[in-house]
Length: 216
Image 1: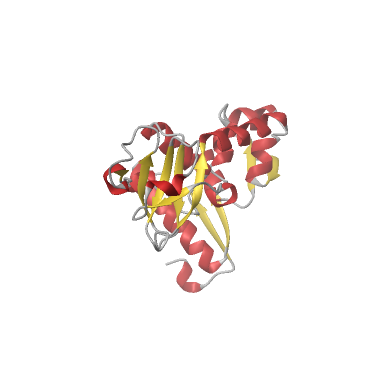
Image 2: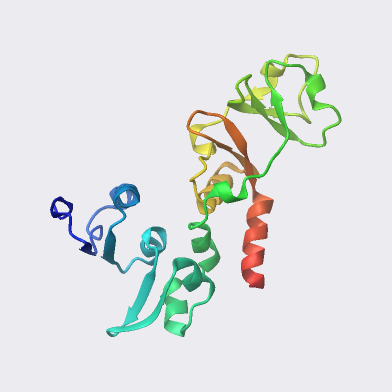
């Protein structure tokens, strides 16, 4: 209703505060999608720092009516200027920062295999597993290189991927880490909506990111 009048500025005072967590996430996603289309200036009031980091371009951290820090989410996470800001953000600043980084920025090129080809494609690979693609370079699963019987067709060594184990380019690095920990894997594939394989993001790459945060 507020958007119907096409105002130059919109005030949203804790709009998602009274809903359950699942609905809250869906509303946040919808809010972000609408904002990408409308590019409105929105003053969004929230006590949820994760929500602010996820949705904001700039965050004003306030205490007793005074702005303690006005900065981008990345700057606030990396360099909180006051103890209250530091404490308000919490001790998991590195994880929160990962929620601002799309996996597209850290996709790694990696070996792949065409599933309808032969084992000779692998050559002298040192990889323990390899992503398997079809002739259109769409992901079909992965092949365990180190424990498969190479006398059998490649398709018999194929393990198909669960939907929750596949990332899109706009998935966040935090989401990638969460899925890796849940599935017990050290890398996950990144694919376009069409299913075309783009590459992978690995646990070692995420460790590099968090290590660079500490060094900063």
